[in-house]
View 1 (cartoon, rainbow, N blue to C red):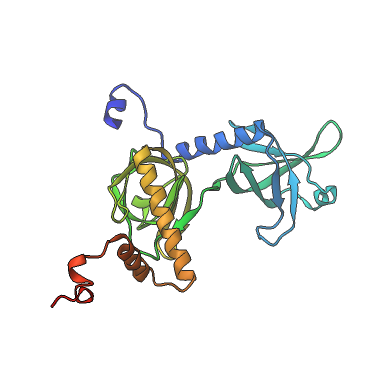
View 2 (cartoon, rainbow, N blue to C red):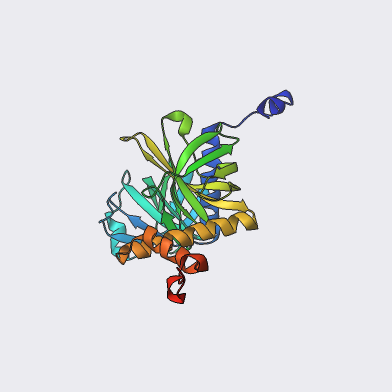
Length: 278
């Protein structure tokens, strides 16, 4: 496809440009929807959080403008050159990034406005309302993902829900994924089930450089009714198995007992001596 585009003079976008465009869409939507954000003046989860709004975005110069902080006492703590961390939630998508304060300005009411850099990276994580089951500790479930950004890659599921899944990749640059990457074809091999074929989009990526792994969370964008029922049945079975284990039951023995109840007794093997036959 890329060869086809180059023949007609259409340049392939770099990965940095693709990421920047994805980040711009999130920022523009947050600005338009007036999404409340939380700001921490130190890059620590234990640091106090203050509320604010994103009030302007200059795409060409890559600058953001934030409204004054609430409570107002926090505004005096911010100086040019300070960094702060921004957290927000857009329609179930948690986002987080860090910026540097370039200038402190005033609005028409003489309230402070903070002009900052555009974030070099925005970290996102999709909130899944559906129950997810962890499968990595139970068994290795293979998944193959195919996208325009990457060659076909085989991996293993980490968890799955009715609305999405997470898988783990090991390796370096060839396994790098980015938010917004479309998985044109995902093949999931659930145990004792037909192969699941679906399409998904990357919602969040977590790099673990120390262990050289990448955790990739995806949301289903297209999955057939039959395959959705297979996924739901698998999740229900794992939930039931977990509950029985928590209650101290042996899952395999319970399954055998259930099978025995479903199988009618064989008259030729029982009750013959009770009828007085030799």
